[in-house]
Amino acid sequence: MSDTQLKSTLRIALIGDYNPAVIAHQAIPQALDNAAATLGVSADYDWLSSLEVTSDEDLVGYDAIWCVPSSPYLNEDAAYLAIRFARENGVPFLGTCAGFQYAVVEYARNVLGWKDAGHAETASEGRLVIGRLSCSLVEVSDKIALLADSIVGRAYGETEIEEGYHCNYGIAELFATVLADEPLKPTGWDKQGEIRAVELQGHPFFVATLFQPERNALKGKPSPLVEAFLAAAER
Image (cartoon, rainbow, N blue to C red):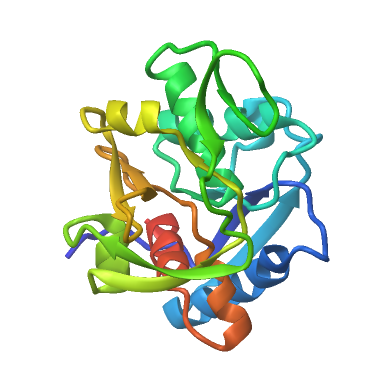
């Protein structure tokens, strides 16, 4: 057992543009509060508008960073800055829906060096590593197969789950092939084999999901991945 003292209060940065009409934005505070209660800690979260995040200094002092749903952000650069900060500094990171999409673009740009990597929702040129889904996942619930020996698989404790979505964009085929040989590993797939979760090997906790695990809180259910996210922030 480690002698490291676990934190009792966790500071979480929520990156995104808050909108009370967005279901995921309604769910996130509840999911964090529920997860914190389960772990016996306090979660002190700050919702940072993408217009507020302009440098690493805006993120110093947070125990974890969550890039939240609802794209496009007013300032996409805030997402890329926050994701890179978390990735390079070992800060626990969770990206859901839009956060998943931005995490993939950030990796392509700053790890693979694809400076023209982009998101089809806001770009029409370059290598669009995030493209429009063949079937919309707006307000859809679906089964997801998880890699058992992964952060997300261990969080759920099972290899098949069902979660909800609200999105029209996912990893483009051209980039799905590239990820097969990258440290940013796919760890969750839908029944057609499309990537629905990724995580970064060698990082304490860097997980992104196209689905929105926080929605469980609105149904009175636990959000296992949010609990795992806070557990990583404790250390």
